Amino acid sequence: DGGITQSPKYLFRKEGQNVTLSCEQNLNHDAMYWYRQDPGQGLRLIYYSQIVNDFQKGDIAEGYSVSREKKESFPLTVTSAQKNPTAFYLCASSMDHGQPQHFGDGTRLSIL
Amino acid sequence: RKEVEQDPGPFNVPEGATVAFNCTYSNSASQSFFWYRQDCRKEPKLLMSVYSSGNEDGRFTAQLNRASQYISLLIRDSKLSDSATYLCVVNAWGGSQGNLIFGKGTKLSVKP
Image (cartoon, rainbow over all chains, first blue to last red):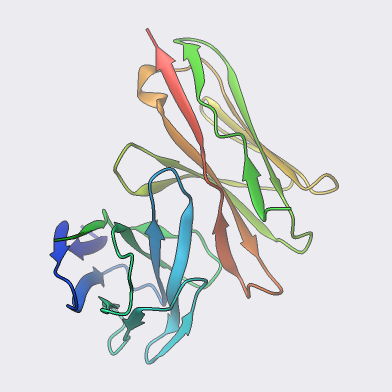
């Protein structure tokens, strides 16, 4: 079955630690995205990538980093510089930038 | 003015009722419009795209009014399974270079 897989489902971060969230898609989509959702809030764009080896900052990129070495994969690193990382992180992909996006089932990140 | 604005609800309706959600957007250059649904603690899922002429998918009807920068979603014969948060999504061309802008959502609760 084609889809987007995020792992892990739950993640705990210690103070000063970097953690990496995985996102893999087998939909052959060019564009991939990372969003953050806080309780009762809308989705906020962290980073996006329209093509392999290229990515752009979204609205709240500070404290995060990404890479896009393969079309299928777009991992997100939450660095120690992100002081309020507790949130629901959603990865999405679309055939092309601006097209409807399909989401993975998310990673919940909490602080230990 | 917020980029995408929705009434947060909640809308509490009995089974079988007809319910309508509205959404306004600020960027007159927007070209694509979507409705997503998000169940509690789950990822958003595409419900339907919204076309200029309006479109229908079973019990769901979406309409677009470009002059008023307004989108609507009508749900007829509500089912218990329609209970969710409905997200209005707008493709913001121009300044946002095609990124999707998500509203905070309208919560629907269908009661027996």
